[in-house]
Length: 116
Length: 110
Image 1 (cartoon, rainbow over the protein chains, first blue to last red):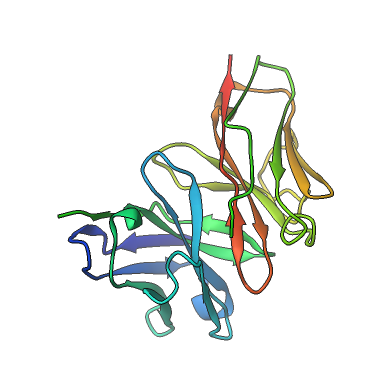
Image 2 (cartoon, each protein chain N blue to C red; image 1 turned 180 degrees about the vertical axis):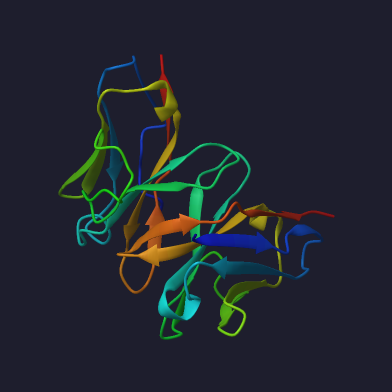
C-alpha cells in the first residue's frame, strides 16, 4: 500500500526554521519525483517544491532561497528544510508523489504555524 | 507563477452535470497537455481525479471527465452525487520544472 506520512510541523517564531519529513512506504522515492504542496488557512493549494528522481530540484518563487527540498534514499524519506519563516508560510504542508506531471498520492499533511 | 483562475463556487442538483473551468495562460495550460484535477474534502488528503487533461486514474468514477480548449481546461462531473461535494483544484505544468494550482472551486450539491 502506498503511503506518505508527513511530520515535523509545529509552532515557530518568524525568522525561525523547521524541517518537515515525509516518510514513504509502498514505493521508492528515488525512482519517483516528489513535491511539497501547501494550503494556508482559508486559501487554496499552492505548489512549493519538487525533487526529481535524478536529484534535480525546483521551488516556487515565494520560497526560493529560503526552503530546500532533499531526500534520504536509505530512509525512503523526503525533507523540506524551511528557513527564514514568515507568517505567510503558515499552512498545512502535504507531500505528494508525482506521475505524468500530476500528484497521484498525497499524505495527510502537517501543520506549520509561524507566529510570535 | 500566478494561480490559474477557477470560479469560486459551482452548484447543482443530484443527477445534474456541472462544469468547472480553469483558465491559465499560453505559458501553462495553453502550452502543455498536463492539466490535472484534484478533489479535496477539508481535513483529508487531496485526491487525483484527472491527469494529462482527460485521463482518469484507476478507481475514479467515469462521471468525471476533463477537457481543454486553448488556455482553459474544464472538469465535468455528470450525474452529480452528494459525495461529490468538495473543493476542486486544477493544476498545470508551467514549464521550467514549475507547477501552478488553480484558485479552487467549492462544489455544492443542492
